[in-house]
Length: 249
Ligand SMILES: NC(=O)c1ccc[n+]([C@@H]2O[C@H](COP(=O)([O-])OP(=O)(O)OC[C@H]3O[C@@H](n4cnc5c(N)ncnc54)[C@H](O)[C@@H]3O)[C@@H](O)[C@H]2O)c1
Image 1 (cartoon, rainbow, N blue to C red):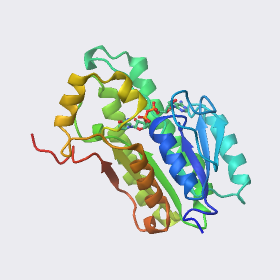
Image 2 (cartoon, rainbow, N blue to C red):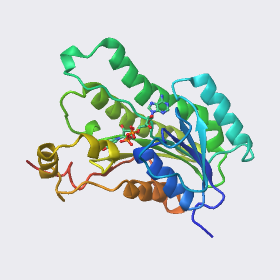
Image 3 (cartoon, rainbow, N blue to C red):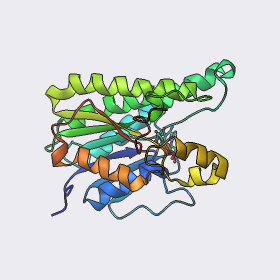
């Protein structure tokens, strides 16, 4: 029997990158994984999603439609869901003094407000999970380190860590574990498309192991936190960063 046989849950924004890798790892471990994305299918240039994944078209900023979708999904599983991975994220690149108010609000809305709303929406279903409900929020190294030109993003990801700890404490008595994963620099199509040799070298110099991560490793981490061995872990932010946060310059 596979580790997540009989489990069902949601990964948001998993039509590409990290979310897709996490969704595939959970599905390969036997779970039914509902991928909620604005495209409703894998984006061009990314690997296919594996059997066990189900694509659903949806925008996490549309709270009413999220309520309907999550209720319908829970209905398929005796009124419960076992996990929620809040992966969908947005950013805006610009010097802090020039960030338009609406862009700051957009990043905070997608990365913080809607993550919180998804947790609230799924709470009654996760609470009923026979496996102990799990929430994983995808944070970032930028919750812990300063990066230039992405201050709204840094702000939002630090908020995700605070939210994770607060929910973990409050919902522990409801049998729900809440953790976050902070990815460092990961091999992705996006990264490969925009990275010139100079920038690559500069970044690699700041990673203790001098290499980028593989998104499958984030999938393995999510699998561990959602699986049976993760049931005593809550309120943590796990950095998968090749020692970037540990590095003293
Ligand atoms: N790639 C990295 O190195 C890295 C590092 C740290 C944190 N992260 C975080 O990992 C997560 C995934 O990022 P990624 O690198 O795979 O990039 P990505 O752009 O491939 O993934 C983000 C996904 O979120 C989706 N999304 C955005 N707004 C949405 C909405 N309103 N409704 C539904 N889906 C929406 C996008 O369409 C996209 O598929 C994000 O939360 C990001 O902040 C990534």
